[in-house]
Image (tube, rainbow, N blue to C red; front, side):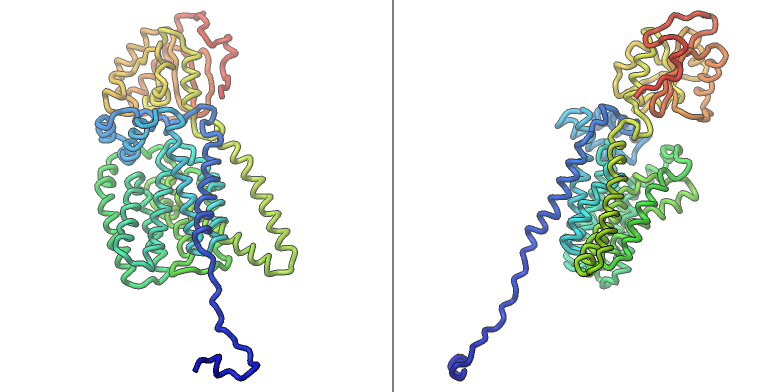
Length: 515
């Protein structure tokens, strides 16, 4: 007999409750992935050319990526080995899409967009769709992210790889499939081969797993994978240690205050209660990746200055996650509370952030947002020099500033150059002995001198020969100041009234500013 047959007459039959259908995660995942990616692409293409200017490090990428792979390999044996893989990648991209300014920066725009998508999905997995969406949208608004999304260097690619390696780690904790750990390890290794300091994210990942108290098999799997990453990186790290002079320009932490300000805001946001979804908590993942890479670089800087904000650009992953989760918490608090002050505070905070971000975003798309402007340097050399003038770089490494556009120096004679950068497999060429440089300088009545802004010690014999010969036999005729550099024309003392060359309006031209 069925239940209906046993029920008394007139009794109401109650059907068992039907479980509520949970909304499909597909649409939410799509929005969380696509919205941050779209915003990052839009911000990345906004002013990406920076008025058709380029700064020194990008000029190095531009020049080396135009060499063939064998030349790149021979060059990095002497200098810039840490960026060898990036130059090889850019060489192939230039071969496919042409070696223009947009092609130089396009990979960074796309890489940062992929990173933003990964940040959103990380937030979704750790704290829910709204937290993920907010984190993904916050990420491309961060000033550092906007800056390096438009720069022809490896940092955006490293950030994207670390982001997706982190996502692979979070997925691997509950799944424990070997192929997932292989994906995590290979992605982390690729990031480290693009820039060695990505290995600091590996340390942060280890701390995350320990704090999250994951099972021992997970810790063992991570340890084996991390050991594989370190082993794969070791040859590059050992060989590049001999090129440590490349970072000799760092005499203290570079742009540390701004980085710390944003990081502190992110860590404070970690105090907000966050929804827990899975074995790894959002704060346990985000805080270590914000704090540890920066802290470890600062500790290493006690022995040798190494901290530069872009070296730990991927720390912004954690900052965005914490900010997104905090905003999600404020939203939930506002909906569950009758206090109007929460809404007021949230609106005021949003207005304040926009007030700071808008001028920052505008300034990042100007030539003066970078340390120097090699396009302006080359233009100043072309303007102030005239055919037959000598050309001198103080120091010789600044030759890379005008190498991107040889037309700027075509009619000038490089007085110190013995072998050009390409044939010598170097970045700035090989210079003549000090005595020969001095002798060549005395054959010219006008010399255009390119030097960095500020005082710099020139202990190299060649540099001392240049400066002493200028001081004894030449006098300064006019200087053009550009972003990060000075272009000065010197004339021989035996010529009391030198002819005014192109670009000069007389002595009053000294101190002019080019933008």
